[in-house]
Length: 236
Image (cartoon, helix red, strand yellow):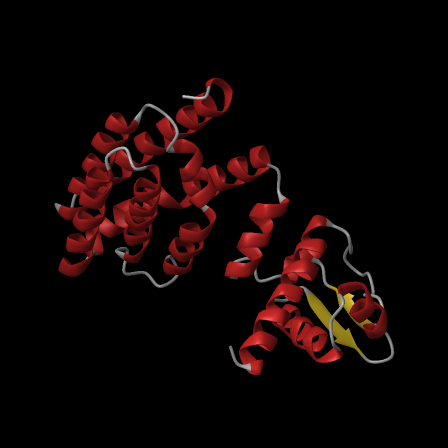
């Protein structure tokens, strides 16, 4: 491995450490980070690696550099919450119940309308991809990992099929953020019913029926809440 590749991996690991520390609240908004030399000693890294990591966190909106004051943690309203690293850090630093509550709130607010828009505006290639994603869910059988990947792909395709570029980032974000939720749900005994519900949603979008697509999405979401609650309390 080249020296440049090793350096890249190092500053990314440093960004992970600092990013998760900020999201945990170890450095609240307005906090000035410790001096460079102190951080370098604490993390066992060079100034070059630290500065690269800090530049990355500044680009994500977590930090800002102010002359004569140093590097400050910004209020979370300025963070780029759609950034894949932030999504990953958020999942890793948030308790499961809070994570699930927030994810379901977002899905309820966006998925039914995304399904209706997809039914209206999906291109032939979107419909073909959705059908392929659904078939992958069927083909996954009892393979939980394959099921999760196919399920994530299916829901991402729904957002892309809206042909609305403002919905696309939500689909991309959910493809990262929903992995934990879908992994929990995959442990349940409701797969046959979930297949039928996804089949209804897929058919409504492919056949261009917005009202049926919206209704199918609402049904799927409503049962998903109950399924995950049951898995977490009863283990099935």
